[in-house]
Amino acid sequence: MSKIRMNTEYRNKFYNRIKDVFEKEETQEQQAFLQAREDFDNIQKSTFELAEQVVERSYPPEDVATLRVFKKKYGDPCDVVAKDKCFYFAHNEDVDDEGENKQTSSHFDFGLFGNHNGNEYGGGEDSDQFAHAYFREELKEKNCNPDIIAQQSGKDSNPHKTKHVDMCNKALGKSSGYSSDEGTGITRQYNDSFYADVIGTSHCRSRAIACTKDEYNIFLQWRSAKAKVVSTHQTWIDSIMKQCDQLKIGLKAYRYLSEGIELAKELGIELDEAELVRTNSTGLTIYNPSNLANMIKGMKNKNQTREDKIKARMEYQKQSVN
Image 1 (cartoon, rainbow, N blue to C red):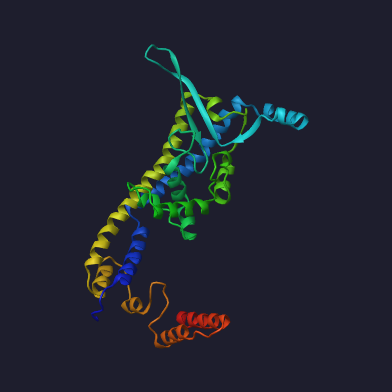
Image 2 (image 1 turned 135 degrees about the vertical axis):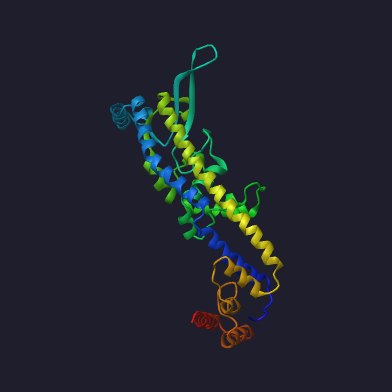
């Protein structure tokens, strides 16, 4: 094996290829995350069906229908029915220190970016991470990084993190405003399955909907299942990042390409040295003499028309692929 010296480009190739393998390995951490996501799917539908039943006890469908008739007849003064996906549930079965009944209540948001902690005014970073983890494969297909929040855990906010979080949220169609949080695209499609009719024009907190303690505990279990998707995703990505940190240290110390090839082989990854040498970071074959000569000639032809340059570049790319 030839003694080709390692450089930054080769190190990046090794790192990205091996990291991709780490992400696809069926580890305990990966399986725990996938199981948590599946468990959440199983509990989500049944919990919302229960939420609909609880909501309809307070706001009977026949009353909702009557009020819609009044709205049609009298307009805005009777506009008191709306669809909502978040609800303030409460029960009175707990007792205080003096043995008196007390109200136990919390906010439950069935939306994709809903909170995990009962906070009516937004879920924060955990909510973003849930949405990214839940639709991880879809975001990967859109060239987004759904693991960015987990990868940056414990670090201060920075432009790199903000850029990728924004890309993920945009790809999912997250709304930027609380007053219009239905979203678009994937977010809207997800949210549309979890709306129920409520009566009243005020916010959730001032219209607590009565439920039993058993029902309330089911809502808590559902919220815990949602939070577990985030925690298992974090644990999985942490395990990958620990491996990647060691990988970076090792690759930085390697002087020759052969050392990287040996490392990959020991990890069960087949990498071809000729391909690594033959391609640059974009994957185009540039060391082929004909391709390289055409590229250099293209740089020198300052008098070429724009059309000629485009034609030459397309021909170069075609040759590179072939």
